[in-house]
Length: 373
Ligand SMILES: [Fe+2]
Image (cartoon, rainbow, N blue to C red; front, side, top):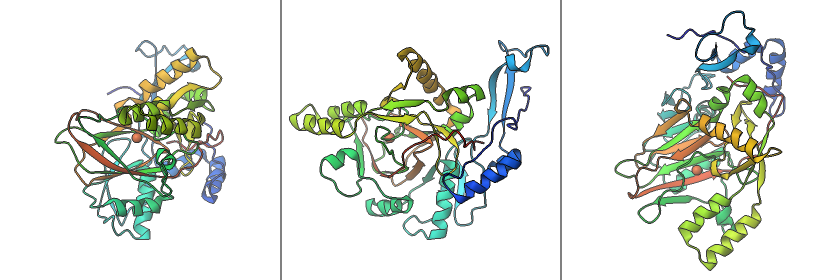
């Protein structure tokens, strides 16, 4: 049993702006007067424990605390349940992220049940509905409950005018291209809010999907690192996506035209490295993976050092959950606080998934709002 010095966050600057909802304004008023009570009310008794170390040993008492280095001891980062659920049942699938949902027929969801599903999504970041029995039409209808389903940028350039499905098919001729941690389409000004993914053809073995909680990853950073990253911005572009599409479509005149149009229509964008969740107020690392080029205003060496560190950091298994698909399973995840990747161990077996996403807002970082557990 490690000896951990429990260090609450009373010393941290707990504020909440009224930027998004009246409830948050109320939260700000409460947080100003009793920050720790505010934290407990929002996130229950979640705590982060740290212990000071120097070369693996406790520091002599004579050394001032500000000279100590900090190592993370334990994190309970999942947003605790704020109210009981009466219309759905939840089972956590890992310590920090993801819950399996049962007791609901997704083809017939009343408003009260949907409110619980939505709240469960904010609290767990990824929800899994085994053997949902949805088809494309009912999946899109469910997506509408979360907001406006998106027209995928590439398909928009190819003439699509309404919300689109992406059917992603892997096979001997089309290896999976999503085997790296990423958030979807961060090369657009307004990346998606929510994604819904349903398994079609499932390989006999392998082909799982993993998700990572970027709120848990942010919370696990030392306060000094959190402060260093606050307000940094990263440039994202679609070059790696274009290369992936070219591999699938082949280097033809048609593909050159479409991909050239895609590059012109979606120039590089600047995104906050740490984003404030517009609904929970929690902070999360906005990780675009191969879509990220560099950090604004830094030398390439500085940028690579920070992004390299974050890449290794978010790969920590304690931030992850993993789902082994059965045909018909549906996953819904919050694109504003998670990353995901395919475990590409099923090649050359066939695998197909049906994906639609819901329009999101422009990501932002709010210096004032701190609402992490
Ligand atoms: Fe993706």
